Amino acid sequence: MNPPTPVTTPSPTPTPTRSPLLSRRGAVAAAGPDAGVAWHYGDPTAEQRALRAGGAVADLSHHGVVRVTGPDRLTWLHSITSQDLATLAPRTSTELLVLSPQGHVEHAAGVVDDGEATWLVTEGTRAAALAGWLDRMRFMLRVEVADVSAEYAVLGEPVDAEGGDDEPVTWRDPWPRTLPGGTRYGVDDAAHPGAERPWRLVLVPRGGLAAAVAEREAAGWRVVGTWATEAARVEAWRPRLATEVDHRSIPHELDWLRTAVHLHKGCYRGQETIARVHNMGRPPRRLVMLHLDGSGHLLPVPGAEVRDGERAVGTVTSVARHHELGPIALAVVKRSTPTDVDLEVECEGGGAVAAGQEVVVPGEGVSVDRPAPRGPVARGLGHHPML
Image (tube, rainbow, N blue to C red; front, side, top):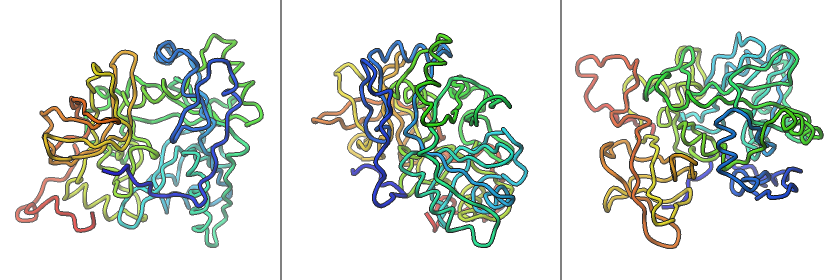
């Protein structure tokens, strides 16, 4: 099975900005969607422990930043994306998706407004494409769109707080809290493993990146790489645009209606599919966390085939080696895959490893607030003609 196909690939693909922190002693460069920053700084286990303890800062300067200004910015973004933004208060974080007319995920971004501009934080190689799409959708409205990734760098912190008036622009990750207008397919918010992952992104001038990191180190924090941040993300079942999303993805499959979709707002592109699958259908695939057998020292890579016996049922999307859980992964599998069986994942160099499932989106594919079917309308559910 081939790796997931990106839904939006700028042409040509922007070259990732190389972080100055990669010149530090012990720094090992990350690859794939995290190219440009450090995978770790020599001791990934200690870095994960520091992140878990709340005393860490992550260089995520490969992320992209789009700034939207103008008096119509919030009502305009409200009308073309999945989130209710019309009355978003300053320094209140949320996230949005840009969907295709068929409801497939094309862009995802964290959103926060500072009272003068709306800031969108997304994958670094997707920022130019997101800004370009938004610019084409301006028409006659009083908005201006700019990709400011070259001006601002992103730092990650294990802090569960919005940015204060005396802080830089800060996006607090809402995951996994079910936001107003959202819904969930998986466990309730309090029982969700993501509830134990405080996380926010702080925007700093790119030229001041090293100084901002040094300030946090002076306070006793440790600099950590993406080995640590990705292990925490996978443990929290947190979907990511660059990894869990392919050209067929709809938000329901990833339990992304929790934080990124408002089900009761006005019309927007892709809304018909969002409503139909929520109300009458079932998502054709589902996100699952896999606990991988690490005894043979073999690990799969993103794009590896997931099998139930001899049957291919899905694809690995993210892989991490967690300091407590061992090797873990996220995968997208067919909804019909039994939830009570161990799976197998193909590894590089041949062979496969056993993978125990931890259910993220239940196999029945029904949200907690799905309307009850009425009579014959219930027949044939799940055969959505648009998916």
